[in-house]
Amino acid sequence: MTEFKQDNFTFVDVVSLIFLVILFIGNFFGLLYFTSGNFPISIAISALVVVLYYAIIQLLKKSKQKMVTQRYKSPATILLVLFVVLAIFSFVPLTHLINIETNTKDKVQVEVNEKINKINTFSDIYANRAKTDMQNFESQLTNKLRAYVKSKSPTLKNQLMAAPYSIDAQVLATPQNIDVDDLVASRLIAVRSKIQDNQQEIDKRVNEANDYQRRFQQWNRLKVATEYKNLNTFVIDSYELLNKKLSELPVNKTPEPVSINKMQLPLDSFTELNKQYPPNWLLPALAVVVIHLFILIPFFLYKVRVYRDDTDTTSGKVIEY
Image 1: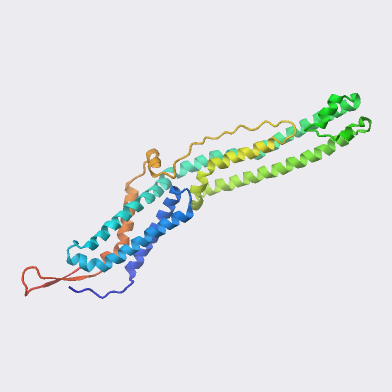
Image 2: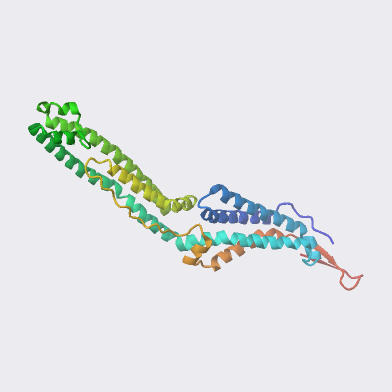
């Protein structure tokens, strides 16, 4: 029994490594969905799997002489079983990834558009509400001040001292000296400044929502899993921000009703997603088989020479594998 002397690292090893990298990428992105975007865990598991593949291939090459000689009844044959186990493991995230890319990607994008488009209306909602509120506030304050200057009513005085007018008691103490237009203008400056600050915060949130939406339209695979999981929270938080700013308007503090369908696709569950959107099993199966055949190329093409003497002790034969 003799063995060819072969290079330690050949072209077929490069091909195998290329497909190991492809497998790493597929496993990584599939695991990102399972872990809801947990990078460290997804990378660690994917890297560990690739290292195990590589180690098994190297051990298979070293053991091929013995395996062939013993007609694959050698204990080293267990390495092939381990290889198949790893292939089955990789089949799950790869199938999940392909299912999302082919079956559910467009549905996720539609859902994101529907929910984010609600946030895109918040700037106009607040601007319109604020404009109407400013007009009502100005009208109410002007009417109350003029009525107070004329009547000096204690009831009106208390109303003007309270929110939302918040006129200083010392100013109201001498109604005959009150310039209604100037006082109203000074109060409007403070209210308008607050509204402008709130409008900027809401506009900022709308811009964030547009960026959020853009990442889904461009299908940023590094962020999709995490941001889809947090989508409902982002929308609800945005409603809370809008309603907080609406509550700070001087007159009409009525909140906007939260309108959101909280149902989401189970992108983090292999079985649940398959129930709703069964994958085309043939496509991932073919992908896994092809990838693993190329990964095994160094083992298949590793040459060994076996001397067999099956019948006659004087006539041996050499078989190359």
